[in-house]
Length: 360
Image 1 (cartoon, rainbow, N blue to C red):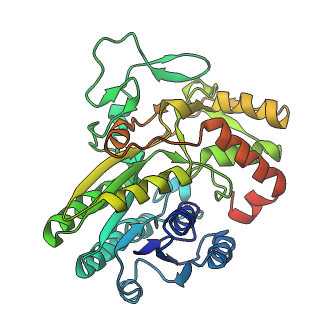
Image 2: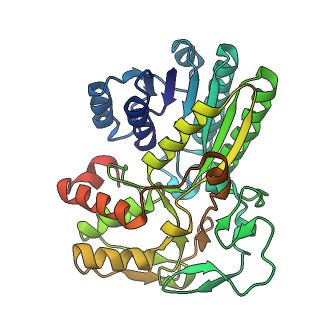
């Protein structure tokens, strides 16, 4: 099988490339990347050593995509991944709104067109940020063990909410952020192309990805950034929700995501469509306060300030329920939260300048 992984030299893309060549001996893997982000060049060298063909190009450029040739599967891991992209908060630091739309929407359209012409399956890596901000802030929560969690005493939970988290049926009504809107629109377009072209389309809505080697930005990988910042004794703050660090996310290792992608590619036939939450689930759900307690034990004490500042896209608790992925594919994440944290901590000790290298 021939795979093209866009964003193949990014944190997630390179992990998928590595798992493909490790677990599918007959796979021919092409990593397609614009190498714009700091740290991409390091991944490019490692992938080349593993036999992955690295091609420099941009998903926004149709001729670059066309030059890639035929494939069996096109895996879209190329994106502007920050929920703050296109906002005033990112002025001078990242993508403006136009760049965001070009990267995350126009780029996806180019890939969908290419997949349709080549009769190739396509995997879209989406995000928990497609879920409605208003609906998420209305989920009944309680404080327990220095973290927010879905309140187990509520008899009737909102539609799309279980004790395991947010399901695929949860509301995607606006607002979801400009970033979330580009991913949600990409999902809809992908399914339209699936019907028109008769090819398999898979959409994986991912929780917060985390692991060693993640590029260092708080808005793109909070677990990695927090541990690296703690190790360097950089200033840290709990922002919003009382300034106590109770806000919660699940964390997902990219190797676990890659394992699912392989299962999906092996089992998909014909013009099928699939939409799944892919997450570490409640087993990996961790608040910033809990993460700080782990950091203190592993890396030594460090003060964290509290701030009452409220930011428009911050959410108190987002944990994705991956029951559907488990039921369909027998998939469960193998990397537990503390295993992921330890991996990141070791990386931080080996690379004390990582945040400087990767823009954190």
